[in-house]
Structures are given as structure tokens and as C-alpha cells.
Amino acid sequence: MDKRLLEILACPVTKGPLIYDKAAQELISIAARLAYPIRDGIPVMLPEEARQIEEEEAERLRAQHPAGS
Image 1: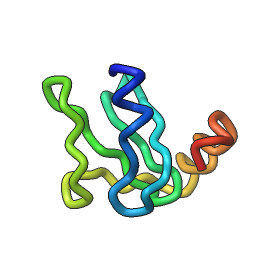
Image 2 (image 1 turned 90 degrees about the vertical axis):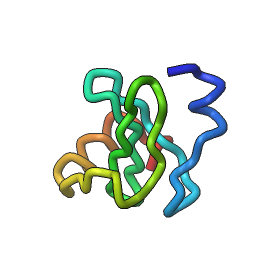
Image 3 (image 1 turned 180 degrees about the horizontal axis):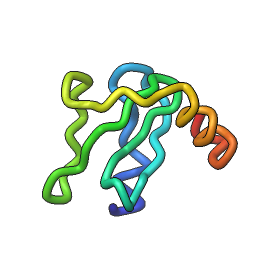
């Protein structure tokens, strides 16, 4: 994921920051508890395509990325 692209992308629901999960190929919004898929290198920023993340996963991500919440 291009760092410049990650800097300008925001969660379409909260307008907040996203965390790039390279292993899962997802952009995660902790605030919205949504993980947006990246398909063929292209972020799919549609809430209806996003995976809902559980509270435990959100808490773990908050601890790892305090600026991303």
C-alpha cells in the first residue's frame, strides 16, 4: 500500500484514520469497527463490503495503534 494513498484515505463512515493490515489486505477503521478489503491492490471503501470487527479485535488494534482510534 502506497503511504501517500494511506495518508489521504479516510473511513467513509467516520472520516477518521485507517490502519493498513498487510497480512489481511485490509484497511481498518477502529472507530467504525470496520475492515475494508483491498482487492487487486485497490481499496474497496464501501461500508457494505467491509467486514465488521469484534470489540476484542478493536481493543487490540487500539492498543497497537493509539493514533488510529
